[in-house]
Length: 99
Length: 99
DNA sequence: AATGTTTTGGACAGAAGTGTCAAATTTAAT
DNA sequence: ATTAAATTTGACACTTCTGTCCAAAACATT
Image 1 (cartoon, each protein chain N blue to C red):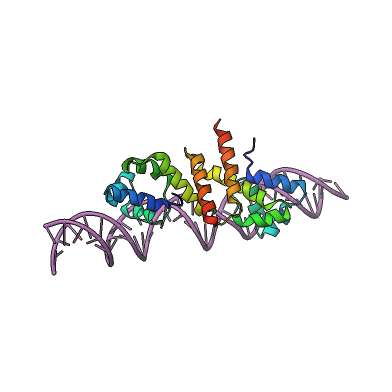
Image 2: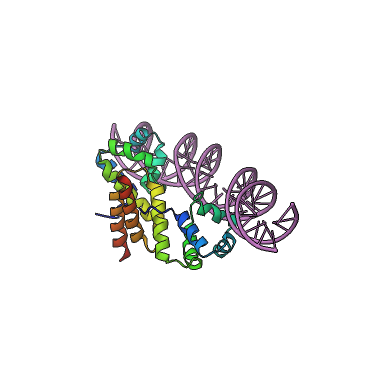
């Protein structure tokens, strides 16, 4: 079962490669405290963090973004009934926009 | 049939059945001004509006929600590169959660 | 146990979001 | 052309969000 929380995802990886919050936060140009909160899900991650996170944690950017989006959507739209259909529709629109 | 702005969608319908903002707003228990802004996309719709909107505008709730979600997602995540994949992943998670 | 390092907690400030009110504008009807 | 109704605009208050600062707590090392 997936449903990986974004915070858990980056914390796990950060510990894996043994970087302190301090280092990662500095790289993202934010306070240690902020990153700590993001990792524990106390605050949401800003999209601005994604690219630098993927770099310093040596993660695929696409995977980072995917995890971020999935997590945020389930938070933002969790309560809605016809979410699945809404997402499919959104996908369509995005694809058609791309061209 | 895609990329419908939520505001346009409900305004079109409201005019179709010839209800003034005043009536609809009253039914939603919000100010006329607020609804006007929502219709013109100046402000986002609150999820609380969806149900009553579907009722007074005689629209399928599912369609209303779908349009709302699609619009909101393109606003919220418009800039992200791997959005399509993220949405697919989110869908998976939601489906698995449902059971 | 003492020191140093990492992590967390909470108060705070500034920004952004949400809706209201009242006045101004636009549109429709007489 | 007046009047009335509908709609839009902008200022305002209130709340929520976002990140910082710095002190406290937890953890590790010697």
